[in-house]
Image (cartoon, rainbow, N blue to C red; front, side, top):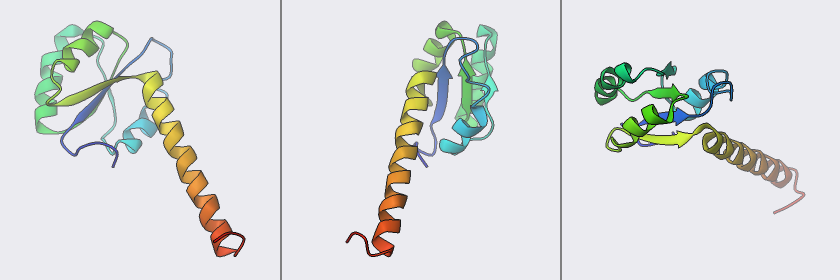
Length: 111
């Protein structure tokens, strides 16, 4: 798990940047249920109530909506799509490096 158990994740980014396309991978990375898209200010209160009951992954292309979630740091963390994908890539690279190191150690190539 890559987040506190009771914290939701809100990701914002421009339309077409890949938030929804990559939502399944992002949800798995953060051990969250499937993502919901929120692009209407009227939905924010209902989503915040839902976050109080169960952590979730929220995607939005509207910074003003992301900012409303940002004010509730007790329930969620807000990040850009770019920052999240960079973090996931660094984590994947570290895991690959660890796997290669372990393989070399088992083969007796390194100690």
